[in-house]
Amino acid sequence: AVVVFTQAGPDGEITAEEQVQMLLDAKLQCLHTVSTHDLAVDVCPAEWDGLICWPQGSPGFLTKVPCPRYIYDFNHEGYAYRRCEFNSSWVLGEGLNKTWANYTECIKSPGPNSERQVFFERLHIMYTVGYAVSFGSLLVAILIIGYFRRLHCTRNYIHMHLFVSFILRAISIFIKDRVVHTSAGLQEFDALLMNNLTNTVDVAPVNTSQYIGCKVTVLLFIYFLATNYYWILVEGLYLHSLIFMAFLSDTKYLWGFTLIGWGVATANHLSPPIPIFCILNTCTH
Image 1 (tube, rainbow, N blue to C red):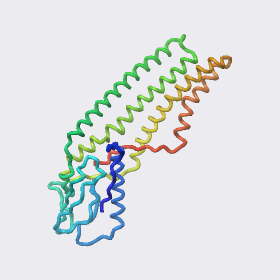
Image 2 (image 1 turned 180 degrees about the vertical axis):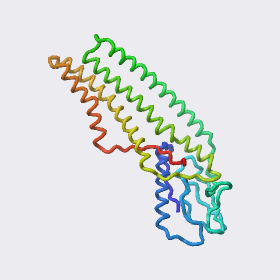
Image 3 (image 1 turned 120 degrees about the vertical axis):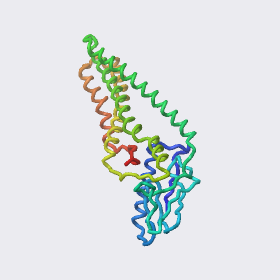
Image 4 (image 1 turned 135 degrees about the horizontal axis):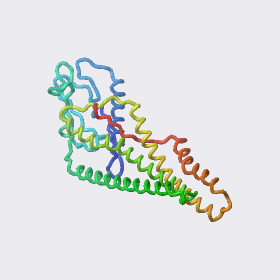
């Protein structure tokens, strides 16, 4: 039987991470189900084809299963079809060494999704330009403070640390988008489905080493995001120290503030396990 997953969220929308996670869950459940069933003779074997967990097929007959609900963009009222040959093997696609399946009824009209895709692409361009302008402006500010010796003081050193944290945040966002948004988003996933639904879709085996780069990228993004707020806190603490504790050493303050700005964020984000949902490009060969 095919395991049915409910769609995510009260608003009816799901993220790319949730879509790929649903697909991976369905694959694992299918492999477990297939491994626990007795192997029957003279039938086409139950298997996972990349999208659907196909049951055993009777030779000479067409096997029909509902379009999976864990694929958000599918028409969930339709069916997918596969033919079992008389030699107890699934029909191969013409000119391909792959099993064939008909997903025609599962394809939705792409109109609304295309509009939403255009909106998110424009939004992505807008915030990328914004972070790029911020990156350039902060870099110029750091160069100015570093070049003029008259500006070298504890207050400006704290400002420089704050600027650096925002620069690193911008860099981490650029890298994060490159790793987990552009390379393996729903756009590529949908394009793959549209190009291959008339034949077959093959999902490569899951390799846990693929998660490492994604986890490191997202972890650094979360860390630099946290350092922004800690350095804003440091700015407030320094202003408080100027008003109420002016007799203490500025140099001693700077080391303590540096520890707060960079060190506390490290302790907070490395001590507990962080649930990071990474998009993996599992739909390409």
